[in-house]
Length: 208
Image (cartoon, rainbow, N blue to C red):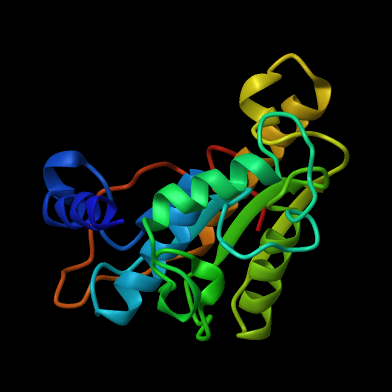
């Protein structure tokens, strides 16, 4: 997660040469990358770091404790056994109350975080924790959306590119991204407003 923080800090410090807007930084990732996405938003908020405009944690692995969909899951690609192994290796001996939200975002109490867009499928371990994360954001007054796809497995969007549902998921996520870059802004403290445009939203036909 610290590597993500360092990369984000570099981005903020080099926005002009990279040609991006410092008031519209969006972070995202899938699976463990979704966990890092959520954790990074928490870390930056708590430390007054980089202002993040939007987060996109796709089917994120954010709860090291078993949930109703991860405790007895035998799905392809990612299941209960692999989930336990993954968390054990990642936490490296940390357990119980010692686990910080920067390692397992489900431990978080304060959900006043950047707006979120994500998707998940009903058959994978992270289904329940993804819905809980989105629900907690909404309860905190944060705009958050999740698209749910039935009876597929973890990372179906990468492993099954030929499926209609995968193409639909990709198209829907593209719409969400275009919506995000039109709606969400987070100016950096002590920074002049950027005059670099990453896209012409009207040209892309983005909906209000």
